[in-house]
Image 1 (cartoon, protein in one colour):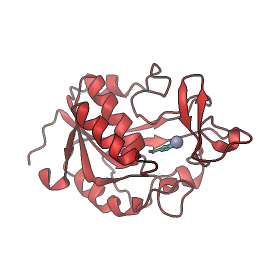
Image 2: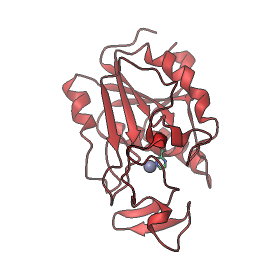
Image 3: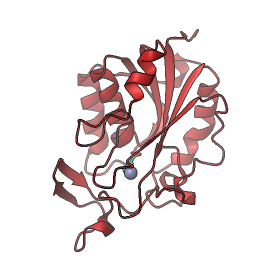
Length: 208
Ligand code: VGL
Ligand code: ZN
């Protein structure tokens, strides 16, 4: 398929902590890397999102004495799943998978940097009002369509896709270039939310 120059690939959180062996490993997270590299070559515009938390971040269970990872608690902006410590700024776990190879990517957008607010989405933090600036960047470059790949399908990929739609972009998720955490039905719920929001759910052979 000829990919329009008004289209960008958004590569989400392909970082060591989300790969088997990492602090918040997504099953088979490593298996999508070769496909993402291949897809990257089709796009002129590539943006890479990087989960990038300060130590002591509000999304870490360790920041809430008496609570365990994967519990859900109430924070000022709403419900928050508590995670193991992951993607701490400057650590090896926060680095991209060593085989991720997208040298022509022009923007790395770091998210979750606010100590008190999580940000699954590459567009909008969990308070649902602080933006990362990504929508403005894409719009100023004339981009109207965003394809998304990466980790985790049922958290950061889904929220990025929903927010891309809300910001007025055509949004597609390349399912075989994603992997999910899938806790408590989160994958099925994510698929339904994306479908309802008009996110295109496709396979890589529709692009390659
Ligand atoms: C993610 C949980 C916490 C993700 C990031 O990349 O999907 N999930 N932080
Ligand atoms: Zn995170």
